[in-house]
Image (cartoon, rainbow, N blue to C red; front, side, top):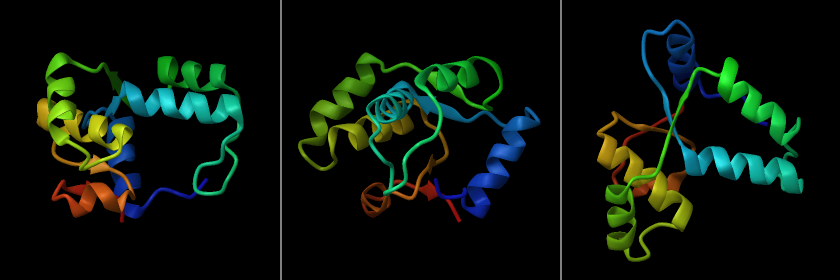
Length: 120
């Protein structure tokens, strides 16, 4: 898997020190589990480990807080009317309804719709 961009890496380091909170929408965690379980690559690279390893990491050492999908998120998704893929719409919905500062991603579709993204 690609290394984190410099700004994303900086944010994760701050989260490891409990200086900030990184919220991970449950849909992003679930997609990662699915890709690992099915052997689907991400950006052409096979993801290492097993789904149980990911869950264990989320429970014990990864510096993220998994956030559930809310009805307000679903309302945003319903109103997005094809602007985003379902996955991206749910990520953007979480960003908007939880009023976070940005989305940590390399996804240009999200960036092109005016959502602040962080990577490099």
